[in-house]
Length: 408
Ligand code: UTP
Image 1 (cartoon, rainbow, N blue to C red):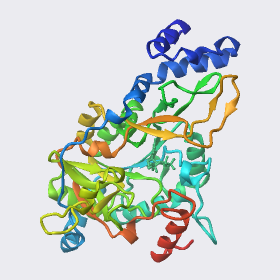
Image 2 (cartoon, rainbow, N blue to C red):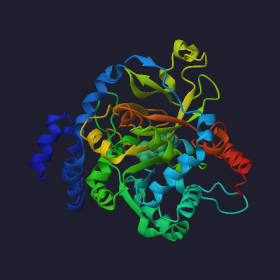
Image 3 (cartoon, rainbow, N blue to C red):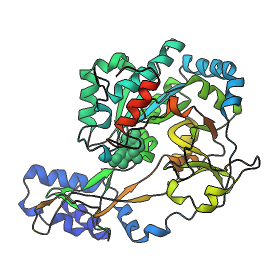
Image 4 (cartoon, protein in one colour):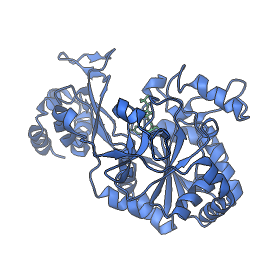
């Protein structure tokens, strides 16, 4: 992009301060800044002012969950259907690893974190080991697509290489970068991270399919005949991936998608709960849970919003193309954003100082006609690592690994 065009784009969004240091930049830095201005979606910054009006919710009602006894009763049948789908290459897996993992407090990608005590057990390694169970059962590799971000792409790909992909066939592993979104102060004025660089952060875990399209991966998926994509988070070290019984249950139910859910351990647990919103599948976030919703009972007299999502969804590829054509809601999150002050000096704030703009995978569910909430045994499949200690931490995940016979 030429300087003139960059100037006009910034002017349109009220962000001309981005060029404040332009004249003192080197040729290389000038080029980098112009490229970033060209590639960054500045329109999101306009949303900073209407933060509270962005998500009017529809009418929330309970959704029927496929519970453990119902799954057990048909486990063999579902597993066969799912294994057939895996064997015939119809199931791919998408690892969402573009997050910053700020709560864990390490600069390295989260998957590189070592939870081992007497030996190395990296988070990425745990995920690959879990996926290998399915590869062995189906006698077929599951194509794995790993989403990184500009902030961790090199470190992630180098780590997989160094560790020989933990025994996975590299032919079946594809890395792609998610898009970045600008980060701004509370008035929607983008922060500068360097004199030649706007502050940006990964644009949330909901942009994965658009990014896959952008990098040409969707074309390859279609050419390979992959029909289902199992999307999952990096931080659950007990995550079951391309789980044949889950895949089979979704196919047998004729559902457009599936979401693994666990019974919540308290009405106010910090997980999103599956529900219907205006009759369509949806997820009510923990911070949206009113007293009324927490106390609501379903037709059987049980708590109505008692099943939380664990960021493990199965999507049908062809539906994703339709969703991609729509605009997902934008979530505006208060965060600590390092920036240059008025004098061009770097500041590392100790408390939140602005907004990051994110799209979330859970909003994709609401775009679908149906989604099967599929219960899994909590202590066997849900060990998220968000923090170093306490709830959802390295400590709690280690305890759950031990409970499941995983040596650390
Ligand atoms: P979290 O919401 O826990 O965010 O991500 P995070 O960035 O990993 O951690 P904090 O909040 O900074 O501590 C849930 C999943 O979504 C992925 C993460 O990598 C994780 O698998 N994610 C999140 C992305 O892939 N991209 C994003 O922009 C955000």
